[in-house]
Length: 287
Ligand SMILES: O=P(O)(O)OC[C@H]1O[C@@H](O)[C@@H](O)[C@@H](O)[C@@H]1O
Image 1 (tube, rainbow, N blue to C red):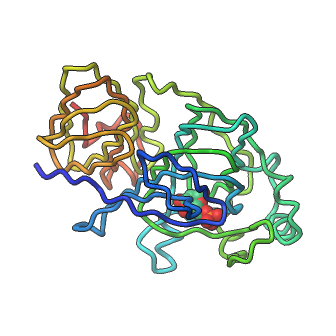
Image 2 (cartoon, rainbow, N blue to C red):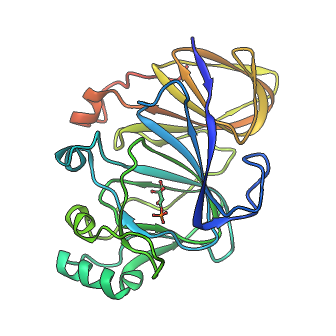
């Protein structure tokens, strides 16, 4: 079955860093904020994997859900999740509001900057994991390196940008914001864990998996994103290593030469997405 080593595309950002790890991308003095993994052959992929490296806060922002995005002629919305790889001692992620606020209060707070103080800022460390459903007001803070898995729709509405001269999208953002406290638990998932990180609540599943040296694992499912975080090995005859992201269409065998830790994401089938019943069998199952 086809496997694709996805192409790493470096994106400069005002909040990016000049010291991103060399196994992800070479440093050439640019302020790199994101590394996107995309396919040269397939532009219509349902998921997008990014590494995000921050030295400063990202914008306070929100994404529409599928229905809202489609009403405006876009293919779909954007829910995302973050697995923190590295974090400065004071690193924080802004996720949801401390208390529910009205649309008018949200708009006024975005305009005068007090939105920063109305948001809940969660201290994070390596292993922190958050699923950010569309509608959640959020801002990744400075001093963080994380892997983001998101629906592949580039639709971000900025509410506030700390005075940086970038475009804001206040009307659209206020219209889709669920300006309430975040209701999911704070989770810390060790790199050595074997655990489902997201299941039926999201448009995709995400697992963290381990593999011992000199063993192999079968991947099954229509499409899987293989994101190695540690180890080395061979995937259907091609070498894999951390810092890469692979798209596997169908079945593949991951051979493990050095102890593996990896994330594996799979899009949910459309039926499961629509009715969102946890007991339904997943269409894509990792072998
Ligand atoms: O608007 P800025 O600050 O550049 O941030 C944009 C970035 O925000 C993050 O929260 C994620 O949603 C990324 O996928 C997105 O690219």
